Image 1 (cartoon, one colour):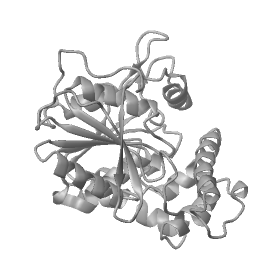
Image 2: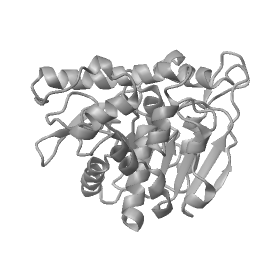
Image 3: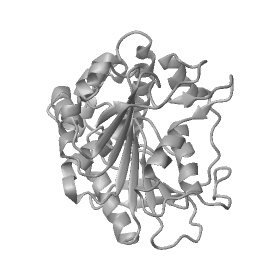
Image 4: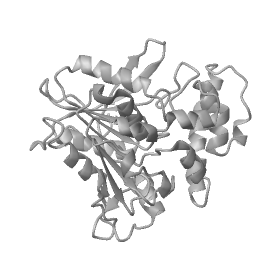
Length: 338
């Protein structure tokens, strides 16, 4: 289903860049206590998890897995804000750092927009650890693309009770070109700088020992993905990567109840990236708003009093769909980062 979102931007934040930057840069860092865990993988690599502290939850308490965006981590404000809401609803919560996101990983390969194998592994481990816990997942931007692609690949075999994806780059090729124009080039520069730092750290550590081009010359996504992302992750080139990693072609196969939240004015992409209604499976509810920016969605009727709407809409979707996900009366286990 493709429908109109109920989101209304704060009257003082209607511009898409204002929405995007306020949520990611101006917003105060939500306090949160987390417990780290490192999962060792069969290929010799690892994945880092950040857990909400266990609070005497029942064996069948729900578990929400959060997937961050490009250059994201447990420090991402959207992730911290959502995990606070997960704790306030009596659920377990964990952020999965994609391979190489938290710290340089051990192999030359790193995470990318279509890497669903690691998510498959993590969810299988969590299902073994908590066999009675209903599972939900939330993915933002790149993490949303990974989540939707995974759900389409799994079809009716996905272990999730429900899922939410926010500000997804459904068609990577369209997005790679859209972000090269106007003010959006600043986002491109910021994101590529972060990706370059990961590669440089792995080169210094001797993890990547193949010849690479001058990374300073790779200033846009097509050139970076063609020279770095594709060859290090088994793709022929950037075009092959975009074609195989984009989630758009997998949407029709999703059987898990899934909410997708998207703004037409997302500065990371153009409106034509939004899937048509006939591209969606019956399990998907895509709520489209005119405003909201990229992982912004800041509302609020009073000047200087923002409401982070995603942290209201996502829990409201989980209530009733993720068994046991209900508000708790007592204080939730959040506080300063531990």
